[in-house]
Structures are given as C-alpha cells and as structure tokens.
Length: 366
Ligand SMILES: *Cc1c(COP(=O)(O)O)cnc(C)c1O
Image 1 (cartoon, helix red, strand yellow):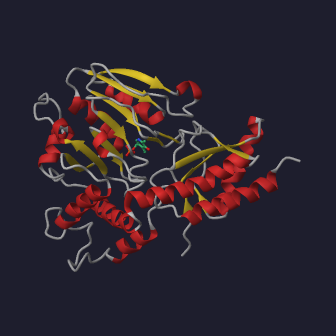
Image 2: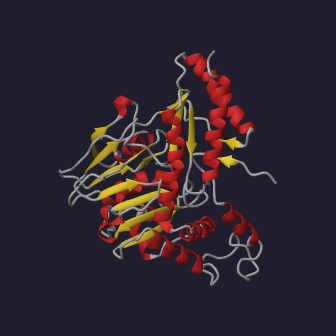
Image 3: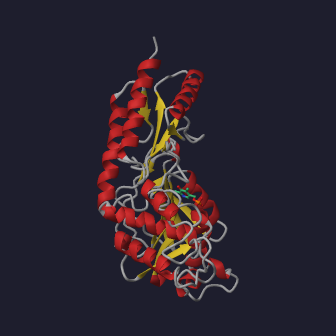
C-alpha cells in the first residue's frame, strides 16, 4: 500500500491512525457486531458516540456552558442561509468580504436581509484581511470568514462588534489553534477540512440566539431550536461522519489539543512560508499579517503568463509523480496551493519544500 501526501483543500487528509482505527472497527464496533454505518442512531451503541463527540468539541474548543454544539448537514453552505433565517430581527446584517466564500454567504443572506458590506479586500485580489477594528450599527449580526480557503488569508485580531453577535465561518481552520468561542454568537464549520469526512457541519451557537419565535414559514430543519432541543437528533444525524470526527478529536487531544495543534501548525506553515519568502523562484500570494496557517497559495515569479502556466502544469504533474498530490491552485488565484490542515504531518510539508527546491533548481531560467 502506498499513501501519498494529500494537499487537497477539501475533502482532505485525515490522520492515518484515525483511518486505521475506523478500518479496524468497520465490521464490529465495540463488540456490537455492527458497523457504525449500520446501527440505529437511537441505539445504545451510538449514543455514546455522538455524546462523546460533543464532549470532546466542548473540551478542545473550551466551549462555554451557554453555547449549544450542533451536528448538522448541508455543509457550511447551508449555514449561509440558516444564519439569516434564524437571526433576522431588524433585517440588516454587516459582512466583511474576504473572498469567494464570504461572497457566497453575502449572496445568500441578501435573500432575507439588507446586507452592508462594511469592508472588502476585493481591490487587491483578496490578498489580505481588511482592517475592521470596531463595528457599530443597527445590525442583527456581523459575519466574517475566519480562514479564506481559496486565497489563503486568515483573521488575526477579531473586530470588536460590541453587543452585535459576531458570526464566523471557520470551515477551513476550526481547531487549528486555540479560539475564544465566547467572542462569537455563532461559529460554523463544514467538517471535511479539519474535522471529519464530508457530511457533517459543526455549529456552535450561543443559547440566546436560538429563537423559538421565528416566522412560521421557516422550515423545521432550518431552525436552530429544532436541533438544539433534540440534541442534533431531530432526524437521522450523519452518524458515520460524527463517529470519525470523534476519532479525529481523540487524535487532536492526544497531540495537546488546540494548543498543541497551533504550535504544530505554526511550525508547518513556517517551513513553507520561509522558503517562499527566501527563494527567487516561487512567491506566496497572501500578504504578511494576513496569512493562513492552513491554505498556502503560491505562484512562480515567471512574468510571461504563458510560460508561467506551462511551468505550473509541469510542477503539479511532477509533484504528483513524486507522491505530493492535489497541489493545483484554485482557478481564481492560479498557480499552486498547498492545504496543510491539522492532519498533514510536518514531514509532508518538508517533503513539499524539498521537492520545490529541486524543481526550482531544475527549471531556473537560463
Ligand atoms: C469549503 C468551505 C465552504 C463550503 O463548505 P461546504 O461544507 O461544502 O458547504 C464554506 N466556507 C469555507 C471557508 C470553506 O472553506
């Protein structure tokens, strides 16, 4: 069996020990004689899985007692709709536009609310997080995208929104480092980048934002109170994805929790950024001060677009042959992108940089 280093932006690499454990329990979970895929979500065997997953989320993210932890479906993309449907009161929300995902969230929210885009980095191809120190106004909430998967930027200091709930899409950086949950009204993440296989969305929501007085036409499945009341068991939860999330969280805990992950992720990202900043063949696209620890897009310094495009293709093909896969950049940024989520080992990042050095030497212009 040959495993590659997988730099996919999502779905993405999972810890090998997690996959091995899931494989070993595939036919007979904990003496039940069944796979987790087969068992009733209301069974005795399954209950400790979903409850244990929630307990680990609470422990590793230090979730305060007045927040609910929900395991939903529909991806982060459904949260783009659920947030406005559940938080709309005055009818106005503020958004910071930091790229494709925030733009999608804006477009969706506009179906129900007046959206004020209070800051944007579009003018500089989203290569940074715009400065937003404080937000005031008549808003139901303020929405940010904590980590921008496509352009490789991430928020540092959060804006001070006072009493206005801060809502964040943390799909691509949840649990990559410590995060103060109490600063947020709602934080949501599609799990398939840092937590689990696709199919489950983690939503952490402050209890006072879970309303029962919503308009009658809000679909039952799109109300936070439906899921909060039923412990994410109003209907069948994504049982298997939740189970694998539990294994991933156990793995994170063994490595020192959010703090351990943060230390490891800073080391990993530094290996790649230091090389990108020091070499004369490649360059990072995100500005210093706004750089993501998770997604690192990079270009060559070749000026001629056609030549650059040919070299990018050559890089991606040769990297794949060397066991470093899914390095093609997003079409909006071009070039290459290395997603180095929690489960990407340091050795994988080092192997990538070693390969880049060799590639740069072999392809330096005469
Ligand atoms: C991947 C991603 C999404 C979309 O997630 P789905 O679960 O596929 O809906 C949204 N926001 C960010 C920041 C992402 O990285």
